[in-house]
Amino acid sequence: MPQQILLTDSEQTTAVIFGPCDRNIKRIEQQFDVRISNRHPENEMGDALIVDGQDGDAVAKAYRVLGYLKRMADQGGVISEQSLEYIISMVADGAESELRALDSDDVVCITTRGKPIKPKTVGQKQYVEAIRKNTVILGIGPAGTGKTFLAVAMAVEALRQKQVSRIVLTRPAVEAGERLGFLPGDLQNKIDPYLRPLNDALFEMLGAENYMRQLERNAIEIAPLAYMRGRTLDDSFILLDEAQNTTPEQMKMFLTRLGTNSKAVVTGDPSQTDLPSGQKSGLAVAMRVLKNIDGIVIHAFSEKDVVRHRLVQQIILAYEKYERERTKENVASHRSHVHGTRSGT
Image (cartoon, rainbow, N blue to C red; front, side):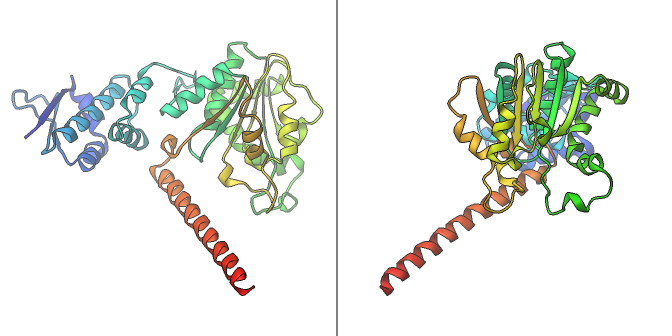
């Protein structure tokens, strides 16, 4: 029976790899049909993991997954359920060359609590590199891929390093089933819910006191997209979030605000537009119009880059399947209708 042994150096590392209630080990055993124990026949200290199974290739893959988990544990990282699933999927798909690129210590920024913000997937790492090297970046992908959070982290680091003098964060104020006029309070109260995710991300990066200080000195500005018209934004890191809810005219207006020594990041999910039926999305148009311009990069995330709860990835895949099936049904219905009309004539 094929067997692989991974030395873990300490019981603490072994415990981190196993996870709560042996969750991580059970998931690896299920995925690769192997058995994993933490008792080396010649060492009763429990500082080794033994992988047994009938299939040598499966044993080797499970062993490599454990190796990545060990590196995470040695670096003090938390092995979340999402991280585990991502590593398993990359090893199972034979994409380890890309996975190894994540081993580098690529810290985007450090929060006030000392927490390092790092890319967690290959797609996220490529996105961060695209932001560093280009002037305009379109981050396209499903919910939970970190496209907005990482962009805010990059903006905060650019401000800290004095690469820019201010951060400008904006969103279109488009209702998702609830009218602005129905909400209580003045205009600021009405738009706050739209801008809350951006506020939350900044709050985590900067801390309460520093965040308020930066707002007061106008080093950080958070405003609805409509407030951007007529302005030129120099020496700024500009982020447009939820861009799928812009019109083509709004998107053009935003992109032409770009001034000297400025960078613009546009994020959105084309599948979740809240625009009125029949209204074109400015993000979808921009993806076609800007794709061949030097200095502009369109980075597409996939469901593999989702770092939220594992069910989010499954929900995204289920909806994609539903949309494909509905499209096929509509095409078939249209062809049947056309054929029937021709037969009738």
